Length: 258
Image (tube, rainbow, N blue to C red; front, side, top):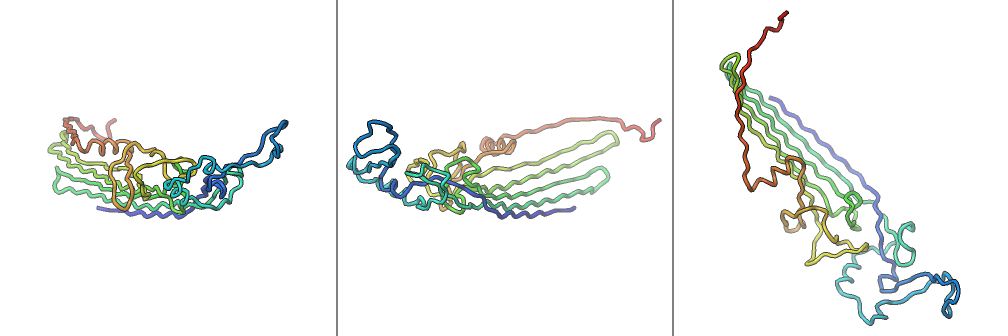
């Protein structure tokens, strides 16, 4: 009997850049550069900056829901390589990208009699890591801690009983499982609806195929699968089982046969 344990801790940050509205755009003012070359309107020259307040022109106040979204967007513009320089600009920050991981395993071999032997292996793995928006190609948030992360825990078991009543007859029974769901979690609070533009922190849609459960205080849990483990999780409700049996006979030959 023996066992092993492995601990891994990664602490790092990755640069993330997003697009934000300028101060004027947040109040409804849209700006552009005049492109006319000849016959420009009075007081307008080529390349001059023009503006219009779309709220005043339409005679409508800003919607409270939109105002709430805008309050969640940073007002700092620190990246001049993003945006048009008039209505939009760039906001860059370092976002957390940690990954703690734990692995443990144990192996047991037991031969209580000459013709009987038992063996078993159990492995447990926990992998938790952040999902910066740039890593999933989803709309990013403006927080130093990503709103999406993984909390994956895998359980693997393999056991066997071998019975060899004679030198040329062996019977073996095996049992095991490999449960390894992949959970995409979010700590983001969703309202009664979701909408998104390039400047909104609420995603239009999720790139994950289905939502398994909703946990109070932890947002929504989005679960996908990984290989055969996904099939096990997906079919757990159907309680699918597979039983195999077989018989094999062989005659051992001398090791030093010439």
